[in-house]
Length: 278
Image (cartoon, rainbow, N blue to C red; front, side, top):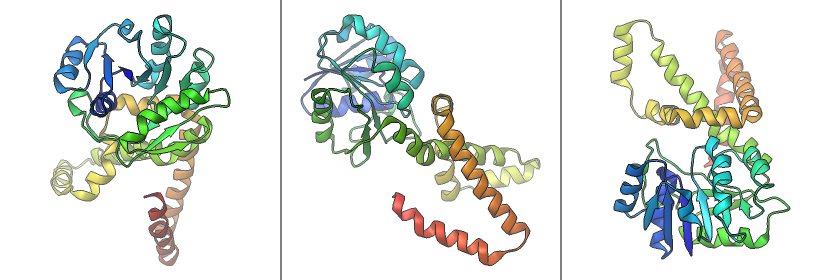
């Protein structure tokens, strides 16, 4: 197939590397000419330009831009497309995106690959980024079966774990396991930075190791991504944050009141429950 990718960052570049390895022709579009040059040099795309008209003769287009640019990108693409072209995106929020695009383009399949790294940009793109990770598709009852099948045909050879769900269910689920961790992790880093004693702060920086590295990783990522999560999935992010605050307040109360048996029970429950998510 002839595949288009708009947005040649970590996800778009990694998708390009993998799709080309499957024998597909991949055309890329980026706002920056230098990104286009790097994407071609790295083998993520066969050719790349800054103009979306390059993608006028494609079977499927993956929109890998930041969330705020997904709908405007679709609007820019539509005048150049044939009716059979299938559009899909990789945004981490689905309801807002699907609800806006579905009336504009019937062959749209909402998507979200649950993979990434702390790095961003075309330089961070790697083969096999998606292998073994969930890839969620959020078709609606009006999404053509043929469009869904075409996207799945491209994704299955990439060894992803395909899931289908409603856009709203996706947003509620990822708020808890993806968006909330970003907010919590950012708060952890901010708490450490608030240390008023410079000697203690320097000591903490020197002693930080695997525990801090693991729990702070997503909070140290792309600021734009965290902002978009909060803006476009606001109700579900707030729901998760309020639940998190409730549990945090409970732990504070147990420590203040020295109710150690109950605190241990909390940790025992979380220890047992963690494996269900991994």
